[in-house]
Image (cartoon, rainbow, N blue to C red; front, side, top):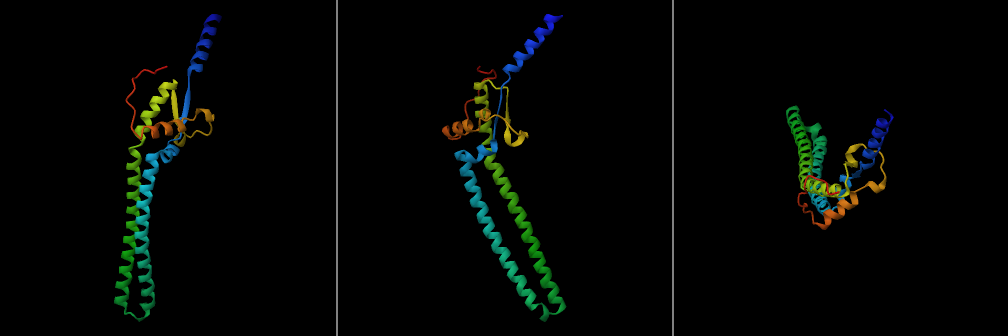
Length: 178
């Protein structure tokens, strides 16, 4: 019985010794790869233009509201109510426009990044197979609090991605190369 226990412990130790894991920070990689930087610049330009447009509309509405307050005392009840209702309607419309703009920008960001992530995954698959890794965690979503910096594959992912100009590698076979 003793040799059986020793064999089980040895097998468990060997299995544990072969387990290799690493991590990558996809969020950092997204903003550091050339294609990600370009996407962020396009998104920022779009956001800045939309912000300028909405701020202009907001300033015009504010000016109109100030004019209404000055004229309110001299208006009859019906005219005052109509003007007030019109201002409230424009304010609601502006708020809805702001929400739509935020949703559009979020969608545009999702679309921009959705072209990069599959390429990341393919490159990461290649790196993991080459290194004989059993698992690779995404630091930004895994809840990982700490790991040895030597296990971080983010820089290698960024370098490989940029060197290929964002082109995905050819699919690897199912069997690990190591």
